[in-house]
Length: 418
Image 1 (tube, rainbow, N blue to C red):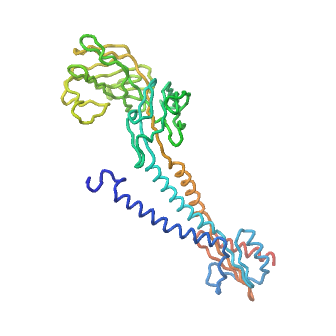
Image 2 (spheres, rainbow, N blue to C red):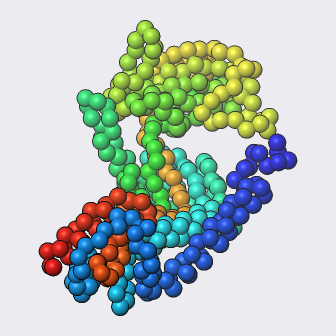
Image 3 (cartoon, helix red, strand yellow):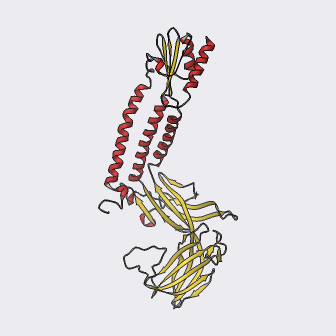
């Protein structure tokens, strides 16, 4: 599977070949049609057919003045070709313009996507309130670059998370608003300014935008060894598991002997029932609990195998304690003690540099516009030929109904004028 690039499909040679061939095929189809259409825009409608009785809705009426017919058709926005004894009229030419605009816009979108994938970058970073983020690769939890981007392409800026405010509906628990206040400097080290980031109001540095993606809590604990020495003191980000921010996490203490791990849950507003056990009934911190399962043994941090910072592999460990801590409560688990001292809010910042996004949006708007023009424009041809009688016929090129009514209105107009 790896030999056939099945683990990296979108960057594989065969996928790129399909993408490029479709791209070339689209351009090869649309460009000649567009050039031909531009040349034909100013052309007159085609000549009146010799035998109109073979056309749609053929009708004969008494002779009428062709000047009257021409005046009426021009008022209805038909393009006119006037010959000695006939009029050839056409409208709805914008349908082909809309069709070509739609396909050319697809080409623009494909180019924009290509620019974004080659020259863009995307990363995520969880930052606690009070902490500082500097836009360097080591500050990210996840970071990916386009093919022609590298670590030195990141724009220089820094931001300090000063305050995060979340509002919830007390009845439904649904989020009402999120507001993040940051001190930011661009470039990093310059004078800081205060900025507000909201869910739909990112902070922008050129084509780089900083989005408020998610939020949660980082419980603060103090861990001491048997002698009372502080081994760990600080916040640890936990991952929310539901809308009420019931969160799970892992506190790893590799510096103790034996190594200690806390498999934990944080409940902002603790509640309990027989079926669900402990859970949070509201997303704000009103009655917090820190549920901990304490394990000793080998945390597996020195094996070279990557592991999640939010989970602990307890296969080679022994559980030595289980406790639900309220705020400022301590628990002695034999090898040491743990105290739940508070919490901090954290925010997940998604930092995206997509230089092709503006072109993609512009292309999408043009594509929708072209599609609407193509779908709703009625393309009609109507011929009026003068002989012993006046012959009228038409042709609905795109099959949209209504041609019969238009010809009936034309005949009615000619009859009234006569």
